[in-house]
Image: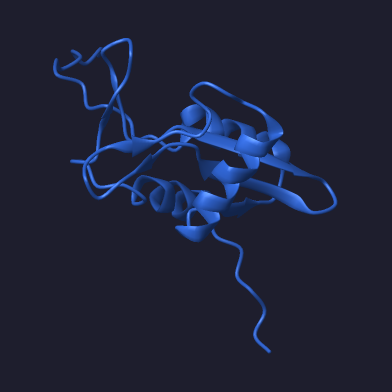
Length: 119
């Protein structure tokens, strides 16, 4: 049996970004748009898991089990939906899981204005 390779942080970030196409955007109440809204859970014994909490549907609508009710039952529905879609990622520690859930997977935005070189 081959040992399971632990993915690099770059591979994990790429996997999160690739869960949604750039065209799949949800308009938020504040006017911004989201492709992901990530969360994490777990413990030191079982490991930590990051997963999205909003899901695009074929008709262009979005499913958000947590929008009005963050009960344990809705968290379980959210996790199970992410699992069904293959969007749950195991992470080795809580610090990294927390950072990924907070958005550290996002790519840096390119600057529109060049910064002058200081010589």
